[in-house]
Amino acid sequence: MIGSILVVDDEMDMQQLLKRSLEPALEYRVEIASSGEMALSMLSNNRFDLVLADIKMPGMDGLELLELIKRESPDITVVIMTAFGSIDLAVEAIKNGAYDFITKPFDHNALVLRLEKALERSTLLRENLRLQKECLDIHVFQDLVGKSARMKKVYEIIQIAAKTDFTVLITGETGTGKDLTAKAVHSLSNRSRGPFVAVNCPSIPESILESELFGYKKGAFTHATQNRAGLFQEARNGSIFLDEIGDVSPTFQTKLLRVFQEKEIKPLGDTKSIRVDVRIITSSNQNLLGKISKNEFREDFYHRLNVLTIELPPLREHPEDIPLIANHLIEKHSAELNKPVKRLSPELMDLFLKRPWTGNVREMENVIIQGILFSGSDEIKPGDVDFNKVLPGKVRSRQPLQELPYKEAKEQTLLRFNTDYIGELLSASNGNVTQAARSCRLERQALQQIMRRYGITSKFFKK
Image (cartoon, rainbow, N blue to C red; front, side, top):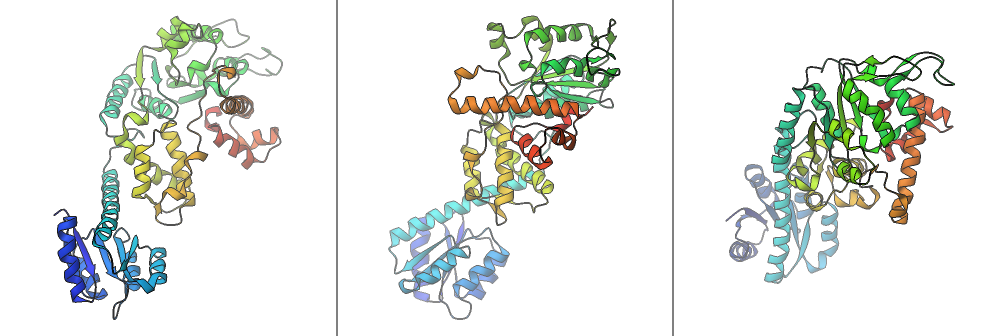
């Protein structure tokens, strides 16, 4: 027998009938309590998978017993038995947390089927709690979460790359954690005391990107009223992270190629090159070899990028890490939102494990934030989230719009406009959201809402 059921009923004949019929049918041990008080005493000393309780008993009735069980042990599955004329009480029991109710007299096969469903819920819940307990002693590697073989391999390569000063290319789908991986390489390297400068390449128009990276001399262009150091100079003795490098044009790749080869930059308007002591880390969510075959990416530049490659697996390829990542995100965002830490219900955890997560961890993060905000209990349930309202990641590829379906092309157009427009505002304001909002005549909260929707982060623009 794999578990135990507690039957609570004041009628001795019913007690014996249920014990004799349920033990062989369900292969669970059945124990008996003749009153609510006796049931509470047994529950305090033993673990039961299910409580099957009559609603009408002398002294403490089934509703009062249910209330006390849910207060002390909210994870226990409770099924209520009621006479045919007491359906209203059974409905009240469901509202108060009972999993199901069964009317007397009941058909044996129907009773067994209903209890099997209730026990499935108990099994799911127990597994969820086990996984949450496992989360308590998880080893989070530099903010990357996971214990699967795929993730352990990633951790090994990060540590190998960190010990060198070679250029690193991080590949993976949107939302797999390329920015966290870049920070991990930096923080484990001998440059960890130096600055880590992150640049989101698609969010800065190329007309501005060159001056941002290389700097400029006074008078180099109309608004260049003074000399300004570029981000390569600001990353001196540290690391510069060029996020989504696959989005820059072949023309600009040519300018970057010299920097990668010679570790020298030439500020706009200057005649002399400046040597920069900086570790270069890049990332891309695109198939760069495919872009090379279409003459959209320089092959010589690719070989300069691809000295050491860290490939991040999509979430669907290591689903065993989903419970660990989900609970980590719940703890993280509960603290940020000043909300009590909740847990995923067994039903929602089951949906999480079956979902393909095309937007990877970023998509899961959005779903979990929904759940934290809209859950009215200590559990996040399927009804608290709407998967259809969560975009599966912000894809920043520059695929021709005419090759996309209308709705996707429309979303891509909005994405490109907002990343270019807001990126330019934030660049001009040194990452100051309030100043950028004032410049475009929006309320600060409205601009922040747009930034969150399109995955634009102000810290990438701070100098």
